[in-house]
Length: 134
Ligand code: MN
Image 1: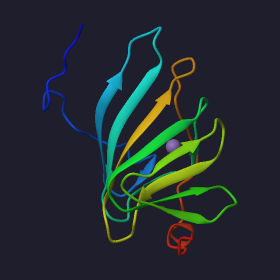
Image 2: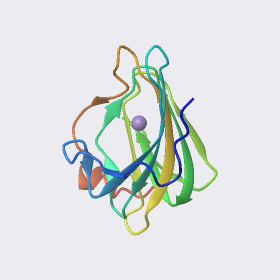
Image 3: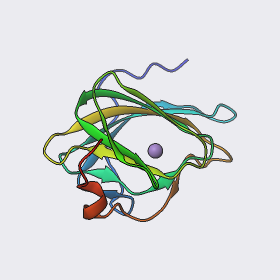
């Protein structure tokens, strides 16, 4: 058994190749093989968001604080708020992030397939990001 004491694992800044703006990641679940579960708390500064991407086995997002946005390719931008839970099916192209003027924290839960839990695509344009959400 491993007990990871609060504050014992450093926050990580997300790779700018895959995110716009400042994003912090705090690991919650990083299971060794053959387990596949992953969970990470992600904090997006105002205006920050992921690139477009897909997940080989899907992903659940649970919003903890602030105010955010999520969008599926070809659909409208949606608002997400604390307490909301989002399921993204395998291979569905999407992005998630903060509101333009408000930060957002969500817990992202997903499984890895052959060590891969995300396939990164292009950045979300300012035009797409700033579209008024539904
Ligand atoms: Mn995702």
